[in-house]
Length: 129
Image (cartoon, one colour):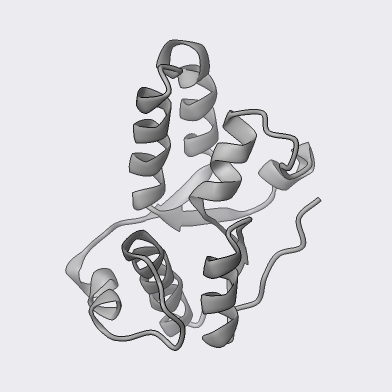
């Protein structure tokens, strides 16, 4: 199971040079519901909703979403071993929630700060093409 953060989803949707292979999207994927908000906000901000909206809906439909319940988000109120930004803390909280349930997702991210914070928590990092 691979946890997808916004840097990976947006790299795919915005057709950036650095993005996972097409086969990546056919694996078991999970993310916080936060991902959905991040994707749509970025598409709206860039005026790409009409052009990339269908692709975003298809992509998000492939990903199992962890709801942002108080139980999931409680971890984000605690300090992390590395400095993190607010949205990263929320993603890391979702990852920790999954790990508490004996799931061991690997993190797919292009964000170096997020990767370092995840590694500090013992979370494995997915190898991306």
